[in-house]
Structure formats: structure tokens, C-alpha cells
Length: 397
Ligand code: GCU
Image 1 (spheres, rainbow, N blue to C red):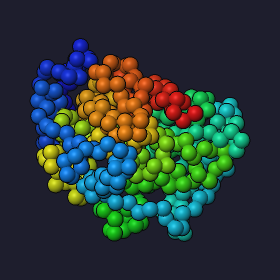
Image 2 (image 1 turned 135 degrees about the vertical axis):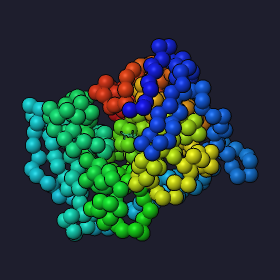
Image 3 (image 1 turned 30 degrees about the horizontal axis):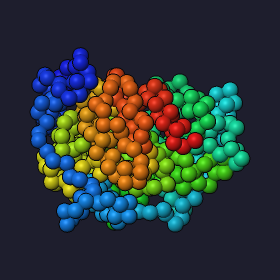
Image 4 (image 1 turned 90 degrees about the vertical axis):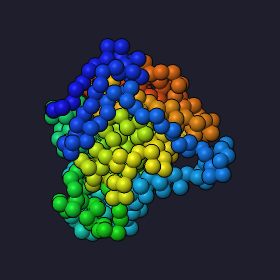
């Protein structure tokens, strides 16, 4: 691997000024800058700017503009997804079971898109065993990138600490992303939702996964023991990009947590730091609408930046989490998204992040937008959940 990592000792200052030249060469030979000093000068487009040059100052004016902002990301990045399918229905995939000494109820639900049994995927629901119609529980929901991650004892189970989440009074709904849409080019491997719908839609896999999360939420809305008005959508890495897009497209998600989501997730694209448009559109072309490829090497031509995506989540609570060694996902760029989404939250009378330079391992979470950069590498750790849980308890309980 050609990645040359230099860990900054003065880590926080390091977010602003990593001195050593760092470049990562991806497998297509694209050089990706990981040196803060080499971030190009750029001007961030203002989500509150009107065409006439004046500034949006009211919620009403922002909400008038909002569909066109969503449209930019649909047209130019993630693609357009269908709505709720008419034939949508749900079946128990197997009988409910109690696990973790009877403290957690586990349910497998088949989300059926129509009457073709192959057009379906399974969501795994974990609930505190005492969840009831009298005491419906709030939930976390997200795509799961490892099929075995919800199996107790599996090497990936630390990502979804079910016992802890349910012990805090929350439920957890997950779906293996590849059961909605394969995480490979669907022109080479068929059998996912984009194949079922055919070429009429230009959606990439991220949009397909986000669409799947909305269908799981459709199911949660049918459960009296679940409070579907208090569902936080969460995800790591490509799952974090998906969580942001799900939160932007489906305002039923009451909160969004993006963990190490990086390029085309929470990171400001114009910084061209870590993964960039050229690299992501060559290595993962099937994540996006084909229209996106024209921005390779041309981040400045994109009519928005990722703080506009974050702004689409306003006024709902948003937590952006980074890891200091995860330069590929551009922790500083993720923080700048949190900062620059703030003015849209302020229109609603909500507070964004404080604007203080991030302090390692210290959440900036007093506002409705939160940011935290933690020690360590690209991962979703149980300790990350502690911060997301604190935030969820504050905003969803
Ligand atoms: C790759 C990809 C990232 C993505 C990550 C992941 O590193 O370049 O964009 O976030 O995989 O999903 O793990």
C-alpha cells in the first residue's frame, strides 16, 4: 500500500496543519492529497444565497429553495429513487426470539416490494424485551455492511452493540446493504433493487440503500411497540453516506448520525482532501448516478457542497463523527460541513456546532448539529455509540 501515514503529534493543530507531504495513490493511479497545506483555495457555495444575490433569511424562503437543493443531489450525485412501492408488505421471516438472557427481542422481517418473493430483503429488528404499545421505544436504524455483524460473537459485532443499545431503552433495526442492492456494479451482478426496478431510474447504490432504509421505516411505523417518530438513522463510512442521504430524502428520520462518511458523505468536496471525486467515481462508479462522473477532477463545478446535504437535514439533530487517523475521509472537511450547515439550522432557531476548533475526543454537542473527532482509525466503535446515544437521549427521549 502506498499510503504514507504520518500521525500528527499535535493532533488537533494537526487537523489544520499536517506538515508532512502525504499522498495516497488509489488503484486507478489517482493521487489523493492528504496534506493540509496542499488543500486548494476554494469558495464554498452558500446554501442561503438566492439567485438574485440576496440572502435567505426565513425558514419559508429556505423551504421554498430546499426541493431544488435536494434536486441537485438527485440529479448530480446519488440519482433518483422510486417512492414507496404500492405492493409493499411485510412478513415475519421467522418467529421472534429472546436473546441476551431474555433482555432483547430479536425479529427478522421480510420487506416485500411486490408479490415476487425474490423482490424482498430481510431487516433485523432488536428491541428491549419490555418495549410495549404503552412504552414504545425510539430506534436507531442503519445499513449493516457485514452480514454476520448482528450475530453475537462475530468479529464485526462490536459495530452494533445490541445489548448496550437495548439496555439504554432504544431498539435497533439493521439491514444487510447487499440484500437491498449489491455492493458491486449492478451491470455485472443483477438481483438487487435497481435491477428489479429497471433502467427507468438513474439511482446509484447509495440511493438504493437509503431507499431500503425508508422501506424498513415503513415497517417500523406499523409496530405499536416502536415509536417511529423517534428513529435515528445511523451509518459508518458508505453507511454514513447512506444515512445522510436517507435523512435528506426522508424527513421521517428524526435524527442522523454519520460516522466517518467522508467523500460524498459529510466531507467538504472542494477541499479535495483524501478521497476525491475522481477516485470515488472510478473505484465506486455504481454508488452514484452516471451524471456524477463529469465532476471527476472538477469538484468546484459541483453546484453545491456537502454542507448543503447536511442542511437538508435541518432542523433535525445531526451528529457528524470522525476519526483523527481517518485522513481518507477528511476529518477536518467533515467538521467544516458541520460548521457550514449551521446557518440553515439557525434559521429554525437551532444552534449548530460551536465553531470552536475541534478538541480530540471532546464532543461539540451542545447544539442541534454535533461534531466529534476521536482518537484512532476509520471504524464504528462501541465507544462511538456512547456519544451518539447521549445525543439521541437528549434529542429523542
Ligand atoms: C472506501 C471508500 C470510502 C468508503 C469506505 C467504506 O474506503 O473509498 O468512500 O466510505 O470504503 O465504506 O468503508
